[in-house]
Image 1 (cartoon, one colour):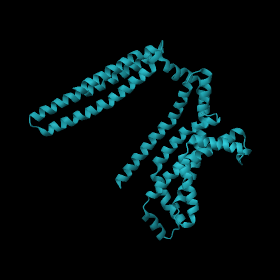
Image 2: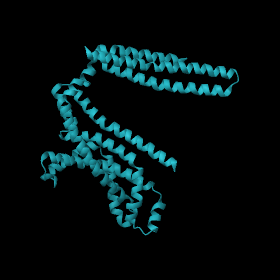
Image 3: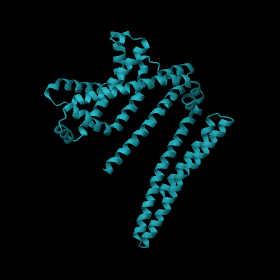
Length: 346
């Protein structure tokens, strides 16, 4: 009964927030009609919360009735169905509360948040500058990603070398991963881009200003994410059972051939999902290079913000990142499920 009452409270609260939502937007004509249609659809969808709550209550009463009649199996089934409905109430109720909070946030203070952060007309007018800047982020991400894959694999392999003669390079690899995983990426970007630029480090000193900023930004991102991805590679390499390497060596393969043809191919297949997670983070962190004056999407958004005294271009920049990161994260989930099914089928 408490769940039913709470479900109706959530529904009424959400409807109340939606009722006042369009009044704060100061819309007219077709925009108001579209917004009201969206509100009606959301209001109808919120009805699922009290619906499942009422059904859970009815099924609970049915379970009690079956229990009094001595039909224990039917009582247990009805009770399980009632619990399932309560989980639906919790999930849909949380969605309804999130909708209500968003409506409250956008309509509070006479819609000032929407006007400052979600002015879609300004976002549309700013699309060209934002797209031009975001293309820079995409190029930065693609070049960095390829280099990170190669560099991190080298670091991970070096850390796996067992002979005493490789102790100095193993120590360097360990120190590298410890340092660049411990220093914030924004500080590394400052040190690399500004420090190398001031020192005139070759071959960067022979490049034009824009090219120098690009390649130094790539270097900074590769150093930071190379340390993280190297640990992912190392986990994959260590997950391969020692018998695989032993069998390869018994067939006459050298240590390098064993790594190349036996260990690394198996390890890479296992670590594709976590690798993609790191590359999603890398795509987002390309925005950090705006601190050194690179004209990427966040920098362009800040210039537009200063021009129009409005933060909507920054929100527009976030939408560009979402257009890339959400499909990537869904791909990661798909690969994880596929890998799980493959393992279970063995």
